[in-house]
Image 1 (spheres, helix red, strand yellow):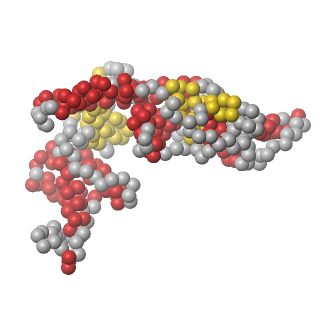
Image 2: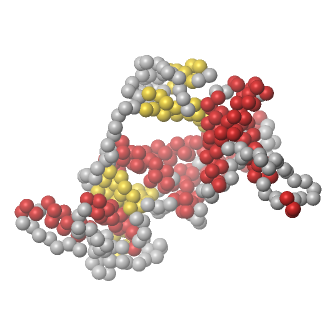
Length: 400
């Protein structure tokens, strides 16, 4: 029903737009789609009123919670507005099995049993107009939280419920502290840290590529829409979900490993969508760089009380981390060699150290330290610390 509402509402918007495309004196000789001149644009509020009136003519709409259908219209309105502002493409019609989730924006009181369910235990949840459903909980739910929303998601391995909670607690932002670590991400090495650690990129997709290729070849010979075609589609979806789950699990473990030995983590501010459209787009998507840097690592840092910040990514691999000299080198050059100070180290490690220095420089500027400047390097950062913390001992250091 959510899919039908989405398609009908999108058809209304497209028809209204099409009726306004052709001027009166230049319409088609064969046919032209025409609406009244005073017909209002089918916005969210207009379509929500029409949806309420349509329930009298189509009783099947009453079988779905009213707020769920309203959220479908709200989601379509957001996608349409994003297309109008040229941020994304035009919303598309949903084929069967393409509407994969729906949301309950307002939950019932006491929708979860009073006693928190055990980890991996089986308990229930009460959803509006659906009643009690059996759920296998993945974690305990603290009693201080109040359930606000629930989204039902269909995946290849089954149905999942994503709950949104609210609690009257205030968590302060993490302040800079501890050991700083800069991280440079790439494809040769998934990441290189300023401490010299380099992690090889696991190839999640390539390990199951042969199995996917075999299943998709078999799918080509099946009749579209048949029972065997649907079975193969489910098998292919399970393989894709296995790849995604394996990648996400590895990302979380790596993020926790980085937080074990760091108090501050600095990364490059990159747009990975541009990298995904290039020649190495398949490998970029397989590594999941954007998911790790923009979603998983910030969440784990917040959870582990580690300061996280992005820095300017321009010229990080063209700068010497020890003396700040500009060392131009092509992408094929994988070793950094500075002609000024003689520093020699892997290119990615040198870039990570530059990222670490820039992150600390940003903290200096935020704290009002006058020593931060365009040429502040790792060595001058040590001098700044000596000047600040050694002032009581009469130590005076000259910094850039």
